[in-house]
Length: 374
Image (cartoon, rainbow, N blue to C red; front, side, top):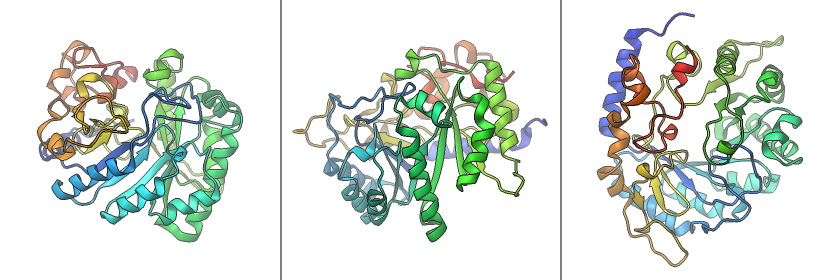
């Protein structure tokens, strides 16, 4: 395999520096609930069927959107509604219509357990333009991770609905499937690839599991050799066509710098955009980057003015003031230049890997994708 062009990497690093300096918000996660109807082994948020933290009222989040609309440099914002399991809320349609009314796009990430045909079209009619489902193998592998015997058939039904809708209405709905790769499903990835192609899925994302939340209690992380196997599979799949000439477009997640696999395992160079283009409002009102970035050093404030949201509280802190005046440690990653990163020759390309792999600014990065591949 040829090494990634140093000239392309250099040009990209210049681009990354420019984007970081401008730090224009264009993607916002809303963690609308911490309740969930599954109990997955790898859950990074450790979600349960009930939560001590109440769901954030729609009106509170709409105040955040109004603040963004009035203050953001760019008006093309995408809102990703997630959780927990967002479909446990019965007011997503209200939120969706308000998001569209402000000129923004929105979509959801769901496990599919509560998605009926009626709810699917209700969300579509409320402006939903994207949806992502998680499928982690066939029934045996998926059930192992999701700990619910009904979960596999439910997500298959959800995928079928989305494929049928795309056949009728084209790109009105963008959808993809997400697979979390671990020791127990690595060997079936080729069979899963063909199954997804047969189902009509066009877009696929693969994640590796990092030890956060409930995943830290379960031995799901790949060894170095297993990680290399996964990476080779991804590269193979990006060039693959089956006997009928069909293919599926696969990208590895944005987790970390991949060395010689950059641009070969995904469409873009590694760039952790947390706090640079990507922000989030958590269920309790905390403001951070993507929802995997939950370390105390990376919480930039709270829309309620404290750290614990309750039904009786009012939004009192501007998200855009926070975005413009804080998030410093996400835009200047020099604090991560210690430990195993200190003398790494790839520092300028990596900047300490993904923020979600740092528990705080003092600890070493949880793992180094580049070293795993050496």
